[in-house]
Amino acid sequence: MAILVIGGTGFIGPRAIRRLIERGEEVVCMDINPHSDQLSGMGERLKVVYGDVTSFEDVVKAILETKPDRIINLAYLLPVVGTEDRPHFDTRLNIMGMDNCFEAARVCGVNRVVYASSIAVSGQQSSFGDRETNEDDPMYGTSQYAMHKIFNEFQASKYIENYGMAITGIRPANVTGPDKFRGSVDHVRCITQPARGEPVNFPHKEMMRLPIHVEDIAEAFVRVLLADSSHYPVYNSGGHAISLGDLADMVKEFLPDSQITFDNEGGRELSGNYMVDNSRLRDEFEIEYAPFRQRVLEIINEVRMDSSLPVVTGR
Ligand SMILES: NC(=O)c1ccc[n+]([C@@H]2O[C@H](COP(=O)([O-])OP(=O)(O)OC[C@H]3O[C@@H](n4cnc5c(N)ncnc54)[C@H](O)[C@@H]3O)[C@@H](O)[C@H]2O)c1
Image 1 (spheres, helix red, strand yellow):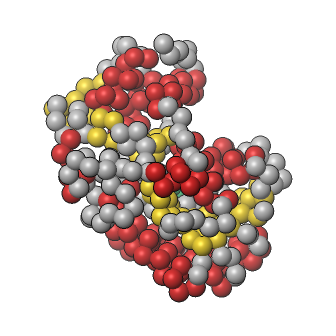
Image 2 (cartoon, helix red, strand yellow):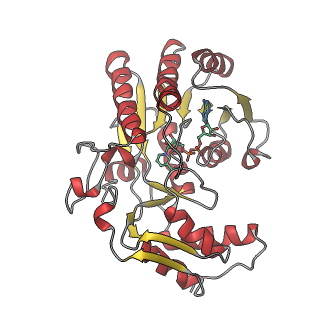
């Protein structure tokens, strides 16, 4: 079938596209940055075009030219540490961009749309106490990014209720991989910097994260997208709950000379939601993630090969 991937040249997009191509689908990727080394060599079933999701005309044009059976929207502004939110720009991309996808899909007769929400909607773990959350729990996120994702879920619910569209959101946890630069990156740097032989320091040893490897979230997006519909409007990806201190210890198993330091021992109470029930996604889409320790080793070795360093082996 034909699939339009919007925002497909970033971190998650190329992995999802590769999986779609491998399954025999025809993919058009529309992105404001239509270049990605990772998309080369995928053959004639992939076309990459320039298009801006904030322009309704661009989205409609891409749909009319592609005639997709399915659309997935990954175009977004992920927060970058040390940079300020730009409310007007970000709202156009995150809120209007999402509306453009839903509305253009509706007027062009594409019923099936998948989009990325985020674990950020839930806010701090402390809001829930010491228990797992599921998709029915209240959303306590307060950052601009979280508020935009919460509103995206509301937008989707309107298109589902009012027009009967089959729209599904996935809430990825802390996606990790060797080439992640936007969004949460402490758990990434805890692996990639030691892999390059660089020291790395973090404020809080007990800060909890819920990493999920980028290949695993890409597979989740693809399975949900290829389904005609879903039982629920939104799904938690879940991941592997781990403190930065324990992640550092895992990295040191492979790289004993790693210099990973922390300013203080605590931080758990500052953590975002990390106790997450993802049974809806696992059961309905038969998703199973690779063991996290194996993923950590893969990231280490991808980074080391890129840096012309010898690979390390697991015990
Ligand atoms: N990476 C994570 O840890 C994570 C976690 C939770 C949710 N998500 C969500 O998953 C989705 C994809 O994340 P990612 O990590 O691949 O992000 P990314 O920033 O790597 O990719 C986003 C893509 O959107 C494109 N884009 C930006 N503005 C655009 C515009 N105006 N028109 C068209 N394309 C535009 C970018 O060029 C980029 O290719 C996002 O919605 C993100 O919020 C990601």
